[in-house]
Length: 220
Image (tube, rainbow, N blue to C red; front, side, top):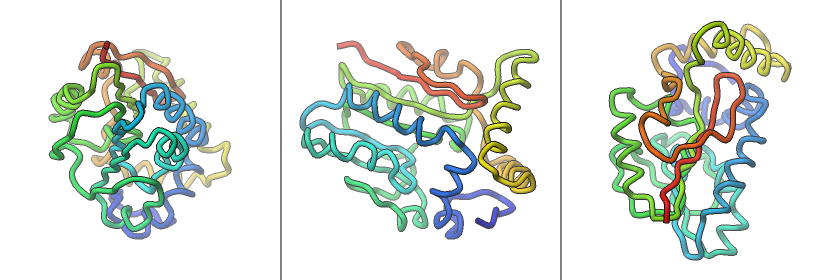
């Protein structure tokens, strides 16, 4: 895939090569997708509603296809890229819109996988708090994103772990560098411990290098 100078999911070439690219650059991607689906299964009710926010080509919908069908649940996928929407291949209804202005219904499960880092930092906290208000009692928000590292030298260690993971897949070093520079100003990792400070009942369930996942619940 040709890396654009300024990264955007609205680029047709990015959309075409997205699935192969993300698996090559994030060696834990399929494992994390499975972990997210595992958590979601525990909270999705019969005839329930699940949101896949920042759906890309539909990896979450595909991972949950069987439970969506069995429980007669409704999946609404949201993405703001027409180019990515053309490549969407998963159950449910796809809506091409801005996730931060969309009017959400009350839901059982909402999944934000690798999305927050591309949203405007000034609006993230309020948007996440508003999303929590739409969560049904006993529901869940599953958030997996790139975050700033912990204080001190450990931050360097974790960042190098991320790079080592990319190298382990055989991806060329010049492509790794090109992607990093392409993301300048486009991708803004969330602050370390942002989720725990922004909302209550948030618990970390995944971490690899710069990336981490949290489960946000609403007690019944």
